[in-house]
Length: 117
Image (spheres, rainbow, N blue to C red):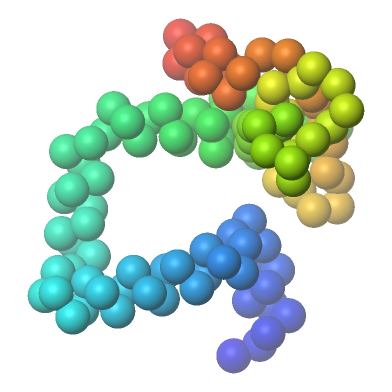
């Protein structure tokens, strides 16, 4: 495996998410479930996932490079303090761009607004 290519291709996922995936995949195997079972479960909960999909892939491209954006909460823990009243940040997922737009609108507020589009 080419480590650099893997890291570049999978840059939208944190190392922790990779660890969680391996744990998750081993648990599926041990309990006798398949990825198809997970897809069926997901389909049953599509409404909840639509909300998460909007957060991860809002229908707003980056104004600087046209790449996908992601909406993240800020000022909800000590590790996400920004020093202002922002409740969310819309961030470009292109690691070479990293455009950010802080907002006083919450992630839920964004999801509500964007799900109308």
